[in-house]
Image 1 (cartoon, one colour):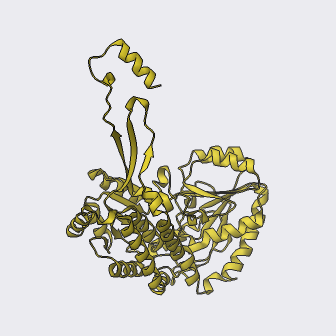
Image 2 (cartoon, one colour):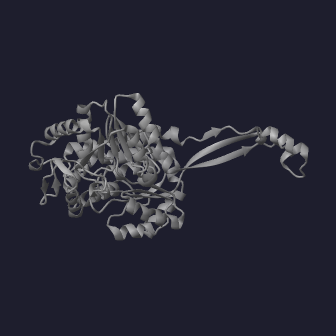
Image 3 (cartoon, one colour):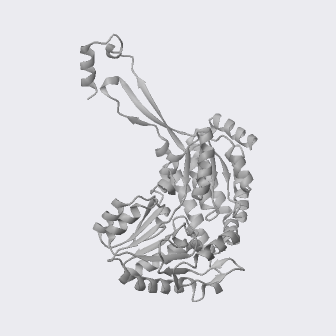
Length: 453
């Protein structure tokens, strides 16, 4: 690892990655490689998580290709030096902001969307002009191997390198000095990453998670709400950092919403979801056992069936859940959706203000006034009004958390900015005024105050 990072630092210092034509060619080369390895990547996702070809392409490869295209199109505009106004006190002068890459970056990705959450931040780092060491998750071994082959065939290790392995390799990488660290994963591991980065004063982006709530307003279209919640929650068996974690709905609407969700679960996954071949699986036995233990919370209104041999859990909806039960004590990260009730929207908003800021929030309403009240009252990373999850597919929307759900953002220009340092430069003319030089008197102080207004 020392040799890899030293080689990358030498290559970065050569200036090769700063040329925008080079960056554009490398982004195009990565795009071509993703298309060339499409079948292999989709097969790896099937092996690791039992994702269908459609779901694998829709939620992973399509987003990667979109990010790569957006980066290539925006690169010239994003990387151009920007002139800023200067005050009269500095006349004559010109101010400039020069975007420049941080240097050698470490990208640590998770297992739940192993292709997307590796290659999207990598595209941002490449667009910014960084070299990068990529560390995929060992919990998705087929995808990790496929990514190592793809990137190893496409780039030299002094530019982009892949390190496979588990905790030992993670720890060894975090002992190294990088210029930037980009981590996606759990808050617990995020704290470890941030502690390691602090030893070298390395800036970090942490993409974490949390209990992302859904608020169903009384005027919501319940049928549309049910359809979009079922899609967003049970995508990848609920193993999505921005998946709806739990739902808040008025008591008189709860049963109607649950009934409609049951209808859409049947439509999407069949009358017996565990009998189908295409239901995504839980990533490993540890997470499967943890999720099965959460099924004891509240009362099972829909689903609840389990398949221990294939590590699958049917899409499940719980009701009569209290907030002191286990399912409400942690991020669920699985196909279990508690539905809770509230009586007063203002009371609910006050309650949610006391909770940790989630990565996502979803509101279903037809009222712009309700939308303004909710969005103005609550802190969260990002979200949707009248939909779920799909905000992360829009490159123009920065994606990231706030507070315990993370720090920093990426996607589109936000990703370029994440891996970029803005270097400020003031260029002065030769004309010189004696105002700033000693000795000082009342006349100079008066003139300075006027100039600085």
